[in-house]
Image (cartoon, rainbow, N blue to C red; front, top):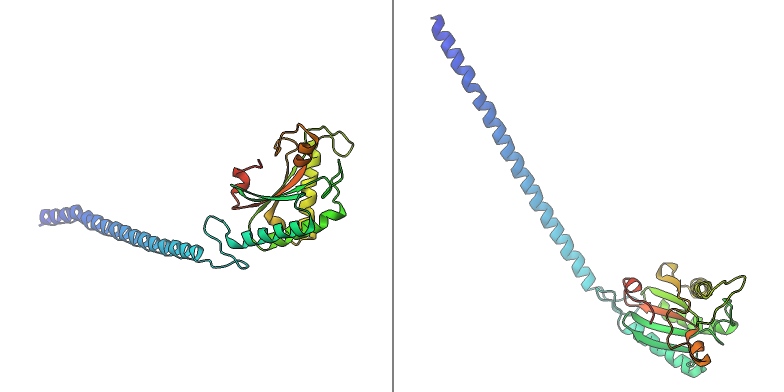
Length: 235
């Protein structure tokens, strides 16, 4: 009788671990099923969010009268504003001092320093500069594009207490134009960047006084996108 009880108890102890093992396997299966279900739901939500954002960007209709496409390029409003600026320059006789050109990075409004913006060797805006910069600010207010303001000089060296070289002079002129556009033109400073190039990026060779006068300028580049500031420099 005693031997039979011992044999039965020993048999029960050997088989009991199978129940615990089966429970553990069941829980693991349930866990993986739950994780898979959660992952599937997240993918669906992410897909819906991406589709919604794509649809919003593609159908963004207007920004102050113009359309913006996904790459940041701006269509008609900028062209219209530039056309109005060119007519203004013709009517006021400033077309010889302010020139507009199209580049890969965007529209560049080139303002000659001599006679329009600054006195020779100075970074203080002349009274005559305000009329031009006010008109440029009017163009910039109509579009959301980033703007790069570049100061350029000729290759004649400068050495004064205030500007030891053309680098300081070109940077100071670009910064002065930027400050005017922010303070008087109402342009957001977050859209503007100022840089000085000295004589490293001339439009024409610095071999005559007339050519050097063309190279002494401030370029206001209305960029097609925020990446253009890094990809392209002035020619």
